Length: 419
Ligand code: LLP
Image (cartoon, rainbow, N blue to C red; front, side, top):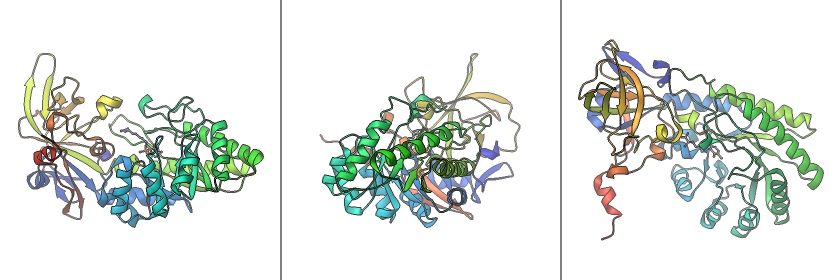
């Protein structure tokens, strides 16, 4: 189970530590729920992914964790950002990213986002039939075209994107027309983009997509005399959230993607493309754990409920994607796990169950629970359901913790109310 935790995790005297800082000290200093991110783990994943793409480029899928300190840390590792809204763009700009560090996405980009992309000089991934015209009118100079190649990835249907009928991208004929139109508008069409889905546990769907992508680029060469310089293969590399999950390391999947693309382009008689990747989850997912405090414990004939001070407002993934997590009693790691329990959230909804069943040392009020592999798409999708302020986040390293997002307050929530 500790192999789901960040690289710097240790246990000593029953106490879990991340980055040399005890979970129980973090609880005292920052309260719960608390997202704890390990800087070393993010850095190691960043370096491994950069190595996997060789002379290609890596852009962080900002949607996985829009945080200025994390974006800045990744930038210092040579990683840019994929942004899909003005808000995400603002996070990236605040972290010091410039136009060349960015890729702008969205299946329905606001005109203001296109104008911002133009003003910072960021390439835009065209994703609708009229977007070449809109982008050109907004002053965008560089573009890619997102093509949807009809590959069904083996992942939850809500995070599948490369199938026919997807709301993302354009099917080959329309994508080719978009390339042609963008060229007519004088845009520098740098290349093509695909993203097959998220939380992919193997390379099959991406491999098939890449082969179809090379054929698509060859058809553009034949029909339009245009050749892509960039093959942006999107993100999607999965991570393990639960001890039963089997997922290869993202860097292995990324290296396979880059190699397959280079080969597929050569075989289609095309020049070598520059490979771009947009990983989100695999850069920050395993780096993060969430700490919760146990409140009520109800031992019913049907099951034992252990309620924590968060739930679907800080991690809606169990409800949205049937995601399975596990937990560790962070100040009792030396005690035998002797009870099977369900971890309930504190929200007014029966479906607010964080973990269906997990073995813990007989839980009691005041215990500290650590849920691993929660660095991606948790804080990013957090809500204020039940008027609950969103959690704080700290970055830990070498025995110290740095607050990188303060806990929301109830005053923050009231500030936007208009009477
Ligand atoms: N590039 C594009 C164009 C994307 O749409 C996404 C994710 C990524 C990159 C990054 O994908 P990643 O490497 O993180 O899988 N909320 C869902 C995940 C939604 C992913 C949306 N797009 C979840 O919690 O599983």
